Image (cartoon, helix red, strand yellow):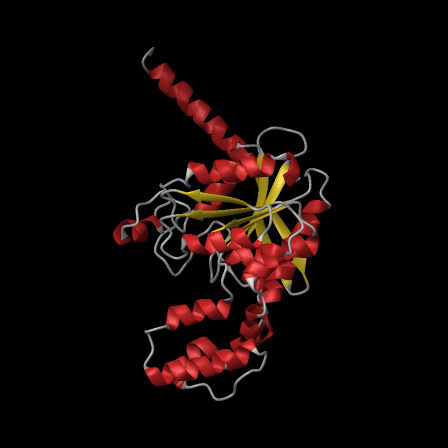
Length: 320
């Protein structure tokens, strides 16, 4: 019996901790004219008023936890970040963008969706958190495409601080040109440039070659126009709040140069280059097979240096 007691005690303790962790995580929703946007409120176990951050996921169907249904398995990167910040005493809200996961009912028809719709949603979350007496003035953490959404929403809603993680400095058309370079036959590349140039100027295009319809179909063109007008370096330069730019140096999707450009654009911004951190915030070497595996491995924790950099920044007096 003496040998079994520590095991039983450990099981009881584990169950108690699990209940405490579960109690600290609460559903939260944002009402919009087209439906509710679903999120998760992560609360530290300590009492009192908390510093809080709004965490904004990246592009495509990436959900509030950092998972993408187009990839096998989960990585839980943003969920892990939220839990780690809660351990550091910082509350957070992460959410499924409209049309994604649990927020799918709030989705709009593609032809009605604009990049600014996502910005307005994020700004509404910030306003909701600012009105909640449990929290001090909210900060914003944007990952990947969520960086641009976050910096726009932070300025619009008056957030207290902004953190960019793996954010792009280049304007979207520049990124698209880089991605398409050498991947299209010359004639299609010429057509792509014609369409891109028109969209950059704010004009839609009727005659899209079938081979480019996935990129430039008429229903998505208004969204692209609304996205193209925002240049990240200009937007981050306009922020009137403390800014931290974070980038991993084994990120195979976003180069360190993008973080350097964002940092250079904003006077007084802090820069944290995390050695060995990849795009899904895990400590992984720059080996394609290991990188690919990390996107579907929730057992890999987020890089502790990332957590420390973000938590230390948010706890600074000048960040809220």
